[in-house]
Length: 373
Image 1 (cartoon, rainbow, N blue to C red):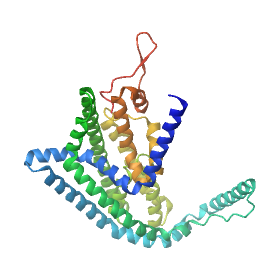
Image 2 (image 1 turned 180 degrees about the vertical axis):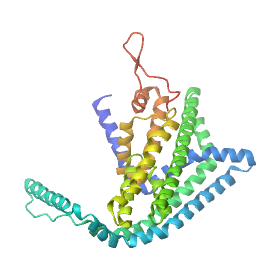
Image 3 (image 1 turned 90 degrees about the horizontal axis):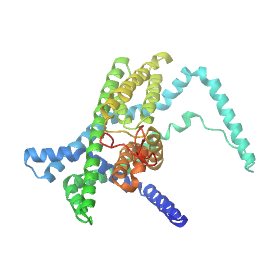
Image 4 (image 1 turned 180 degrees about the horizontal axis):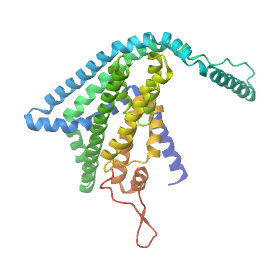
């Protein structure tokens, strides 16, 4: 491509990402509905075939069941979560007393940060003194009000998600058929069907497997919180279930949160370490042993690109974007594997493998994708 074409392509990509960012309120629930549809479309087809019911009725019943499950879980954890947030400022003061041994190092870090900020402001030509960072407790009070302000936007996005999911489950196959019909050649039609079926099969298996393992993590942490003595074990079990959808960052956040909750609950720091230690053991058992064993033959993605995708979509769309990062990267790999000009990109996105050379040792040959995405 010429330089002008490359520049135009870069500007187009930047414009697309900018649009996705500013239109997140409407685009994000639609993308979430598409990904959820990939997991639920096979059960809808099976129930439709077994019960001989119209797909619209089956989709509606499934949406109602899913909505009822979300409402039930939300009501079950909302009361303890509200009580925990209400008592959080007082509990933090007590936790700071338990961590008095760290007060000196923390003050040293704050003073060093204050000096570095002043030094950078002087180097930049700004001679106005910078105010030091506020203590941790200063930002705790607005948490509840911030959550309340975000409730309206969340309800609107949830409504958009369920409406879009219903129509995808009820009429998604007809949309795919219309898309295949406009393909110009038979090879293009077959390729489109292969890409769609492979995306549906692999993403549905991935999401079903991850959901099953996350339920195991949530139940295990519910039991361990109950045994250790942390109040509201159902709340922290649901938190562990939800955080486990986010690779790497989610479990790490859960460990820190469990330590913080243990610090607010128990009188000694060593006792507070029990819950996060057990959480770490559960995560290592699930994340490093069971789940990779279940997905190894189907899901092979480059860990570096997985982490990069996670950070990018978390910056773009927040925590929901972090959840969608791996499925979207997998869809990109599947599309690249079926488009000849994009096959090298699909090979780069794939997990660790060996590069085979053709007999003349001049052209690389990418390994087959039967066990890839």
